[in-house]
Image 1: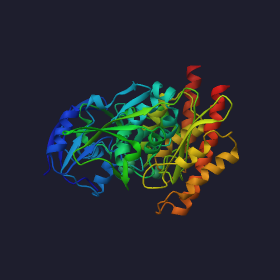
Image 2 (image 1 turned 180 degrees about the vertical axis):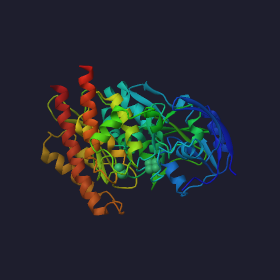
Image 3 (image 1 turned 45 degrees about the vertical axis):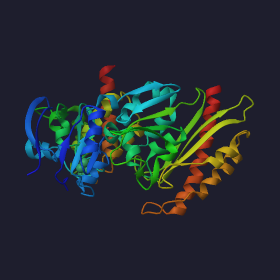
Image 4 (image 1 turned 90 degrees about the horizontal axis):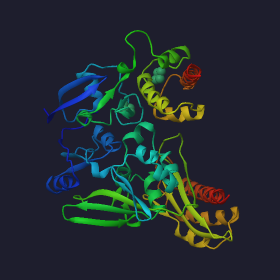
Length: 161
Length: 290
Ligand code: FES
Ligand code: FES
């Protein structure tokens, strides 16, 4: 058994206090200890983006962050981005535009886009594609995701207008 | 895979971190973790001790120093990108950072981490090379200032003793109206570059080149300055032919050969990207005047 430490953090708005092995990655902690299995593990070396979560509001690879480093931080996972019932507007746009097929990459993609769309009111298609460059998808060919993001942005703009 | 067991340390000051580095055997510094954690997950590395420097406030500052900018080693790439001071005074760094990984890796990855990891295709070392930056290194024995030209000692080998820590980087800024450009060739956006070039330029009032710097990444094991090209360009009236001739000197840089590209292809790219960076930097000096 490796070295352990007590950590306190906020996960999806709830205070969590746990003892963790210091060598655990954040994604393994989320999945195996907190049973938040919405965050997926792909490559475990920072390439695929499946494990993307929001760490203090910024998207981050949870396979490249230790759980012990999240001590005192605010973590949001796909569970935290999803309403209790139904889908969020961004999730609905993904469903409407075939932004997912098997869904393996989707939680990471949605975390990335959540941060990106919060900081960009009116991104171009090119900017959306670049934002998605850190999330690999084996199924969709990305076109559906881009369409979904553009539709979401258009709907958000018309609501504001 | 998962990291092998290690002991975790989280110093709250540089002095504490340096004391740990001096006293612990087989310790690794954990900065943004975007390379080290991947290597530990794969057990390429299994250090006995991890010294996490993510909670040392003095390492996260970006501030004006003399005619330059001093970056704490733990400045996140994302925070450098968002800094109005860096945007205004060091646009080359901004243009290069847009090519560094992806949003998620820039949110965690640090300026000092990239310089210390010293991947041959990393953008930061080439940018700081073009800027003639100075690296500030500390240890329990004292501090050293190292010119960027002396930073790379070989493949992924920075000029750092086992008990030393990179604490900051000072980059002199170029005059307000300078031209700049950073361009690279990667298969997909955010991938490791096969080759890239950064250029800086100022013009005399008669339009001739007053000052110029060109640095390459991804070609040799460390960043490369094209001093011969720079010397040849000074005093010349800019033209595409003049830039093409100067960029030719990139051909002689030793190229690395690996699965991503052959040495010959990298040398070819280096010539093309050095030329394009010079042309773009020159175009921007004109915009500054308009
Ligand atoms: S599992 Fe983290 S980036 Fe692939
Ligand atoms: S939907 Fe299958 S990997 Fe993206």
